Length: 118
Image (cartoon, rainbow, N blue to C red):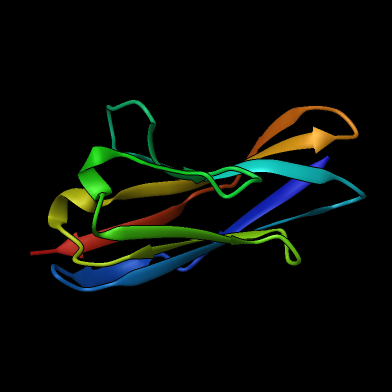
């Protein structure tokens, strides 16, 4: 089992920045892709950004040039630096972690609220 814990959400004004962190913990494991998703009421969860174990990065078009995803494998942690935030970025942000070893698996954090005021 892998536990996933997010932190760093909050309230910020439009144009501001926030940094989300997500740490994976548990017994011995190897993590592959780590990513961030977001969800607003009545809508499906959507990909924001993901980074593979080989550091290949994929961004949703709506965050390109504004958000930066990175990871620290020594800490099993993924970060999302969010800049130039817009009111439409308001959502609950979820961390997603995919385990490669000892068996495959997908784990989600509990979510962290990001609210951008206009």
